[in-house]
Image (tube, rainbow over all chains, first blue to last red; front, side, top):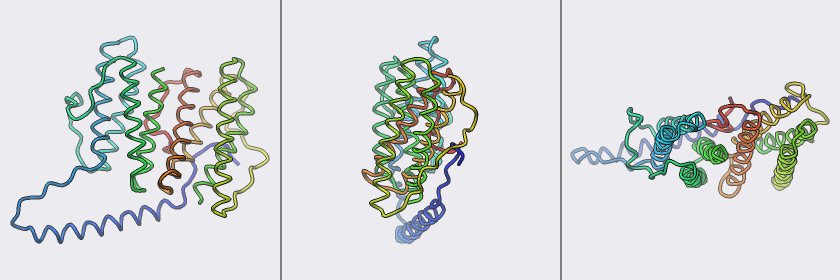
Length: 162
Length: 140
């Protein structure tokens, strides 16, 4: 047996198909619902439950950017962590089906305020990890792996800030 | 539960690997970290064995030996193996997440997260940068 290497997951294809089928069923219901409201205003879709996690990822990335500017000696350590959060935001946006704001320095109005010190960043990562763990616990199966990786990544950031 | 069996195989491989890794680490703090990691993997293995028994699934016994991805002869190669092992354990636990719910998913997430954190620790000791991955557990 080879010691390392990717471990294949047997049941994935079937579950993905089931997830898609459930999604398709939902789509049909929504469509017929729309037909009844033809003359009404466009219904505002409810925000995806993962939207706060996406906002938080962008806020954390922006906080690392500011911290790298304020603490240039730590920039080499902080910049990869910002990149991780941007990768999370991109994946979350893809899963939710929204477009990321193009300006990377967009004010993080919807995200939490973060103090740009190591202690402040650590505190923000801890809160972020808790949020990602909670999101993973409540998520439907097709989203669980991504949210788990984001939670684990945030935990490694806490370690990287030590 | 194919996913649980795969996680068990990864934990057994980790226990085997840490036996080797510990021998080649010469700093007390690193040896202690290897010991703690091995202990953590033993606890995860015991959990998986018990869970698979509950599910009446038979787990393949741990193989007598393993093929190492590269020779481990010194501190540098030991640290490299430790990083690979923890990345592999995280990869083995990740598919358990969509296959489980509630506390069982929480346990899988803890196991995956702790492996990822140990991998980061080993990367820092090995001076590998960056010390983190954007998606721990995702096959590279």
